[in-house]
Image 1: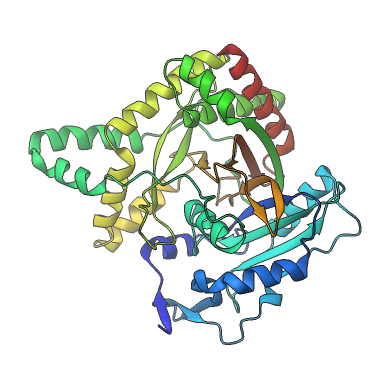
Image 2: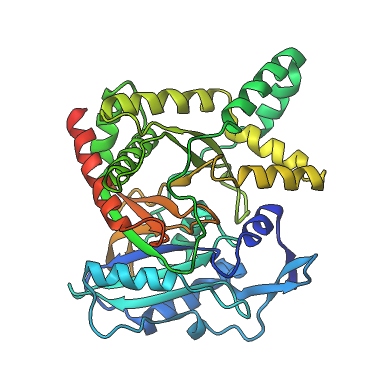
Length: 420
């Protein structure tokens, strides 16, 4: 057994974002129907399968200049799976409050960076609140691990990641110098243009508030397809834009367009990387009240970025800059500016068929991702079957009542489906 594993550049970059006010983890909420799943049963299930994900028995080690994943010689599953401290079974409001409280807590660095809290629900079921450090895994990897550790059905799996075009893009970029320069200029203009002032720019503190919305994927897909051959991801961005527009109006703010960052998975089926994604950026047209016109504008923007492979170019650029530390640090600081992007909106496909844990059906699957310095809002979508869940995470001192924003997203989804 290999005793140490070096953190990859992507892992290190994520780890470096953590500070006293920013936690580095993501979260999956697995809501189960009434049945025989409790803390003891869940511990037994995960312990019996954890050899399939051995990185979850490693903790941070090494030095400040050479950080490693080292075997946790005192690993104890009971330190990672336990009951949530709640006085009574949870309704939706108390569940949101518990998740926000847990999400704001840093994971202890003296043990592997994950934790599952199990809480009873008012309907007789339970919810598993799984916090997992982003330095260990991105959204695609986290769902692979959910399949390995939790789901009963071996045939229930996440939708296969889109194969990376990085190799093809690299060859294409150097094929023709004139075309390369023209494409690079367009890429830099698209990816490094500044947006308007961000309503989520401020000093992020330690408190969190969360909100959730759900939408039918099939209905959203049908409506988006009828509206100019748009995609579900385009529709998701349009819904988020509409929700933010409603929130800004309620706060009596200005409706300036803002920049959004959209992660793109570069995983392929056989890779073992914990983090393997890039991103592209575009303007969210908050000025547009009509959901159809807004979706068409967003679809046109995402099509340009897909056509030119902006996410793959971003990945290649950052890989090359890694060899020039001073320039890499400058670009990293530039990319982190709230004028470069106001918020990040991700979408990770989950199981397409129903799944269960210890014979108990999973009723819903939701996710959250952490906000960042001067980026007080984050939206993460994840799907299970025909249901897509949108998880909103915010600093309530900057984003007042994010649950109203989540409710507005549900309204926007209904209006877009009706309009389509």
